[in-house]
Image (tube, rainbow, N blue to C red):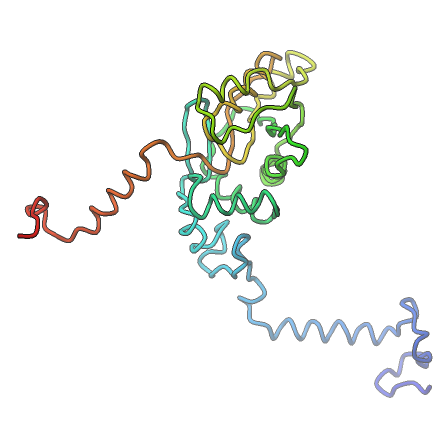
Amino acid sequence: MPTAPWWPCCDPCPPLGTLEAERLPLAAAHLVISLIRHSLQQLPFDWILSRPCPICRRDLAPQERNEPLCQGCRSELELSPWGLRGSEPLPWWGVGFYAGALRQLLLNQRGHPSAQAIRGLVRHLIPALPPWPQAPLLVPIPSWKRQANPLPPLICRSFASELGLQHSGILERAHPVLGQHHLKLAMRQTNQAGSFRCAPPTSRSQARRSPLLLVDDILTSGATACSAAACLEEAGWQVAGLLCLARTPPPGHWRRRQQRSRADRDLRSPSRQGDTPG
């Protein structure tokens, strides 16, 4: 085959089907690079920098590029920009209340976990976390079921990737427990008592240097987290609190919210709030 006229510096092209990577004509490589460069120059700048929302996969608007989630998902999941926090039954930090769209999202994630979606929720929570004097060690709360909940270890890996924290599986189940969906608080606490065991710190200095943060997907009554924390503290660790994605709403939360919503929709003047028809 004769040399192509626009490849004057190349050897004759080999027969079709015998072209090897190391025998690709140098001029052909330069041609491919120039075509790619020209194509990129013609693309809109916003298209090159576009980033999808990790949950709904829609492209983030230009003003949302620095946000972990799009405004639509933040609104639908009812996420507070400052996250949630509390001190009972132990210090905890979460993304939102376990209800509505966030509840459905986490239920779906248990069966089909998505690292991108979990990382998006973790990124939303990070600005709400307080500074710790020393970097805490993350410890996921293990499941006793044969098909373990995949979310706590996935949340740990997301925090470790975003903040450079270490995580460890020093906590494990000592024995199976009953399902707690229909148990009251006292029965949950009895059910979880003594259900964990853990490896002690190798030295006192390691215990002082490594305060622990437990990690779970949902905080309900806190019986599981408190039992895990008690086991770790008995072994010599310092437990600083719990990181979670969702917190079960307190009693009366939705009733008070509905009352506020009805009050916001009432268009009567304050002087006529007690008026009724007739």
